[in-house]
Image (cartoon, rainbow, N blue to C red; front, top):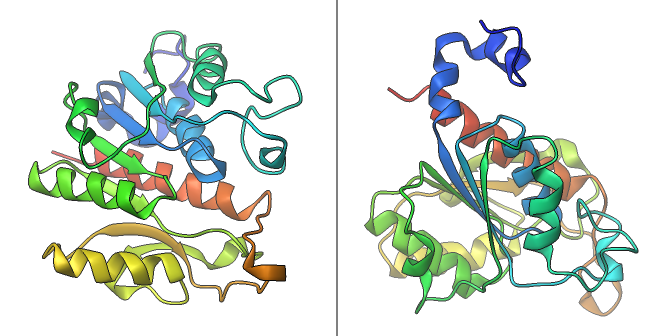
Length: 229
């Protein structure tokens, strides 16, 4: 083990498998409360290439949960701010920031790199389906996050196949659409908690449930990459 590197603590765990992590390429779609935690955690494994995709700007409502959201970043594009911050701790990683919304028509445009894993942390059903459909058709590893809004218990966030999920309205919608596409399995992060009912059905969030989901996404991706043959 090289004691003069940034990843020496991680290497103590993964040993010779660290090479798999170091040479890997991952793309994260969505830099909200979930995606920002996932991208940040993945970046601290000092992978070869990390692509971050989001079309949105920081808003005051993001301050309670999204990494790098603050009063100075409000109004700024998320990928640009995220890239600047990640480069401060992993300058050797190739960080690609993409300011673009994924759709069924342009999904292939995001895959000019041969990614080892795709992280779906977007909240739009059509975008999620486009990503999942493309990845399944092209044999690309993907994990997708379901709903984390209106939950208060991070202990109930877990990883499972989408067809085993419950208490998640988003997962229910996704299952219905995935059956139409004849997609029989999909690794997802979801909450087993029954969502809290809010005024007028508005979507609330906490500082800890989305972040927990993001860390589970990261752990799943990094462990799968590390332990691959």
